[in-house]
Image 1 (cartoon, rainbow, N blue to C red):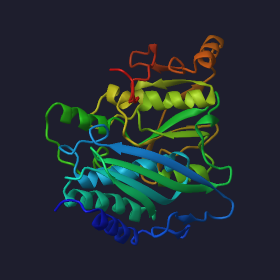
Image 2 (image 1 turned 90 degrees about the horizontal axis):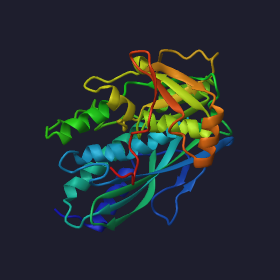
Image 3 (image 1 turned 180 degrees about the vertical axis):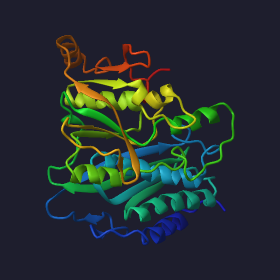
Image 4 (image 1 turned 120 degrees about the vertical axis):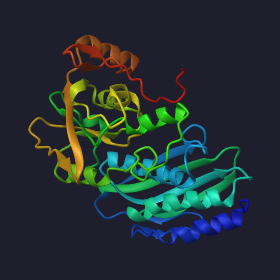
Length: 329
């Protein structure tokens, strides 16, 4: 059965009724949703695009995985700010010849994530499009002034990551090589897990000075923290937790693991595990040298502010080779 706009909107509205959050006073049914965060909380808002043949391929990614990834990516942004998700808004562009079954499975994957994290689907839009395009907006909240930013890292802070890195990129490498990969529920590529529980603990215990989620790769995302905090960084190759089937290059540059990269003050007692998730210390934040400081401020480029200690004990620059849209290959 092919798509019908009326049937699609009806399905979305019925599914949305299964995900409720007290912050949503009015969801689907009016021109706007009405949200009311708790007193003493700031609103967090993030958007994320999922575009066919850019972020996923129909031949590789089942519709349920695409829906899961769509919302999980937005929730990972909320986790990166140590927030609590409240509601999401989904705008869908779908080809007219897309089977209804694909849309149903996409929504089932998205709503399974929404129910797990009590995120209400509070509105959105649908349209025809040449390729599948899903634009998710997620609204969350954090105690006033307590959201963890990218700009809080200080020289002397230690650098940590959650979980293991390179798993998602390792799956992509296999698929690009022509291998058919079964989409396991445990796969960080097909079904990434937003680290909301870890982020909540970090905020409650006051452990993290800055944080970002690893969507574009460790080398790129650490450069974002360096840029926003105006610092340099040094990491150790031997301390990076590399996922099974991956290698150091995929762990450094692969991206789409949706783990958390955070810094903590020297005196912070960061446990080796939070919410059953491994925590690894991989380096330290440094001061920018005078030369690098001038260059970084003039060019707004912190790509040379990171160095890595290799397994032979040699220091070398770490270029940001992870995912960057519009970069020429």
